[in-house]
Length: 109
Image 1 (tube, one colour):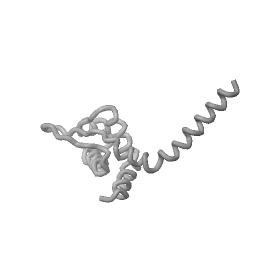
Image 2 (image 1 turned 180 degrees about the vertical axis):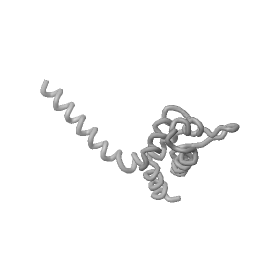
Image 3 (image 1 turned 90 degrees about the vertical axis):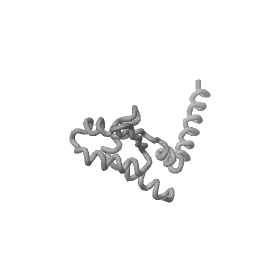
Image 4 (image 1 turned 30 degrees about the vertical axis):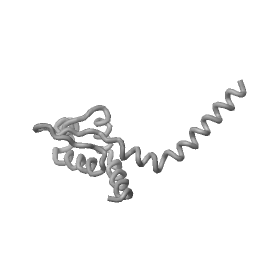
């Protein structure tokens, strides 16, 4: 899979608010699929599994099986790759601007 395809799958995965909500939960700790199904009671198990499949395909979660449990772990690396490619160069300019502003304000005091 090319990097463009990988980035496309990450953007697709992040494009749904329910998947972003799942990632927000998974940032705090690993969750079992059953726990996620219980948390998202408005969705049926099949729908939760489909969302998890999209997240897994995008590399945003890593799945480990332990006995009857399926543990879902957040993987931030695909988001960092997008940040590095699309955001970081713009953030550098903002940091430089803030540093100049700080210097100017300190010079006035």
